[in-house]
Length: 342
Image (cartoon, rainbow, N blue to C red; front, side, top):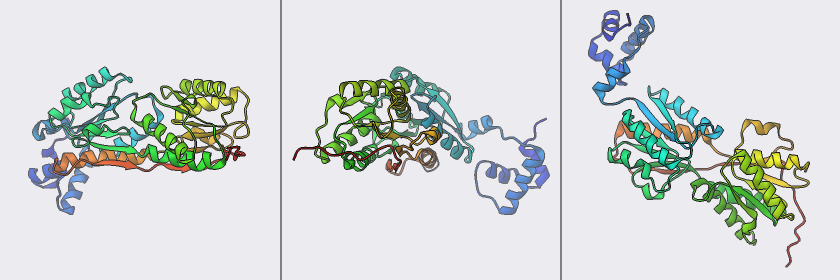
């Protein structure tokens, strides 16, 4: 038979109120805490989370809605989020909406039907329509990676300053080395991250005295196949292109595959700026100049902020946090002779 709270009381000699306070996250005297923890270990006690949830009206579960679950970047964010929440005895329930805005609405409603205490969303929708049912029930909501400006007073958000890091990288590592015909492979139109990274690229061209040529912009779906097709189309339509900016790790992989298939050398034949310093990039030769997102920090902060909302209520203004990304300098961008006419 499973051990109960009464068994802990009999073992420790402590009252049920003290033990219950400890099990629900309250502060107890150190000697009582040690006694309770020793008894839990000795008795192999497992708390009845369902019963405790009925009493506290909390499920101790956070619902997470992602565009797709088979994404290496998202998995790093999710792993850190889960680790942080688990230390607070919270679990996560992940729902994959398969990059479908209708399924995104269904995913949130499904999670609400499971009585989750909060929602963390990487939104597809730019309107936030999928979150209306959660907000109507006063369920705390936090956005990761992509913001919804119209909801800034109602939800917390944690994003990367994509525009700033893209500008810094294109300006400082490509334009500064003399490149004038610079292609970009970016994500779908009206996707928050794609639009910000593209804007950073455009701003860098402007600040470098260059025109933003639409023929050098390729939009796709953040996939390896999209990156591969993007490079082929850009180099075919712009044989004078000397550098390319791939704006996520899958598209970076696709661009590298296309360059390799053409038996071109980096950076002698083409320079490349990549995005997301994933482990597999360590085998690329020469090492890439690449933008690295603080994925673990994003996951940790998301969990911590949502926990504070749950514990302290909604008194504090909502936070819109932009994290800085890092630029890792490699050997994939060479200096070229600037032939610009004066």
